Image 1 (cartoon, helix red, strand yellow):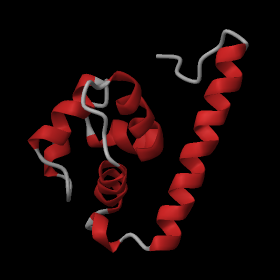
Image 2 (cartoon, helix red, strand yellow; image 1 turned 90 degrees about the vertical axis):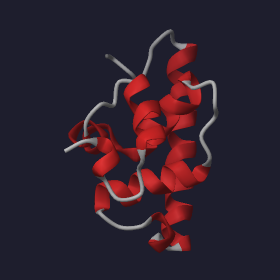
Image 3 (cartoon, helix red, strand yellow; image 1 turned 30 degrees about the vertical axis):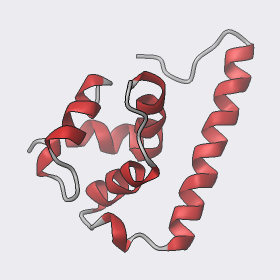
Image 4 (cartoon, one colour; image 1 turned 120 degrees about the vertical axis):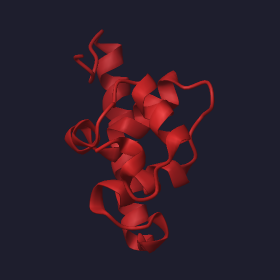
Length: 100
């Protein structure tokens, strides 16, 4: 199965994900939508919208991104902010969250 075969992801989304090393649905599930979104924000010339984050969540859960409840979106944004703060701390220590 290809990334574009997941619900809510198409060829453009697949290309963006492959460009950051997320080349299979399994890899997307492994690193999770939030970390994939952070990688996209760091590496992509076209900055992804939050809808892309929600689409990746929907894709790994086999549901449309519009089905994601407001409370879940709030949780995702909190998780996203937590990763950003962790990355800042690690960067100050000369470390990185990403090891690959």
